[in-house]
Length: 174
Image (tube, rainbow, N blue to C red; front, side, top):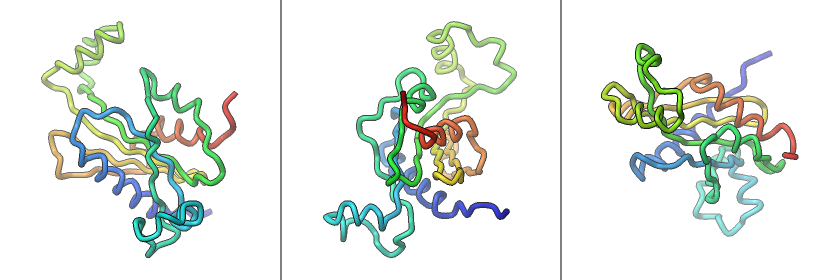
């Protein structure tokens, strides 16, 4: 079996990352439905001329304006179900990380841990944009605040987040 072609997903995620980057850092998580351009224009013909039509099978991102991740983005995603008209989903979010040698110093209590990481001089701030398609194709992009000119990417960049996004296609919430 051949590997799925992720080029249209990667192109869409790069567009999302540029869009999110336009608003700088310190943003909440943002969720996007991904649909083919042809499907979007069929459902919303008034968008003709405002959406590039050169590649009808390209993916177009539609931001879900009312999305709020809350304290646990995984729990929030578990309650989402996309209709058949949605071909994929993506999320853009920022996180701070510490090198592994500081893990033992992180407090157990959640608010204290967040404060500890946020104030630590060795933290790394990163924005990730992770997307999936219904067929299981996945990809992630990352930009470090300390190195904003480089965009890193891989199919398995944030596997847990990609799995959670794929779960939004697996069935209707209870």
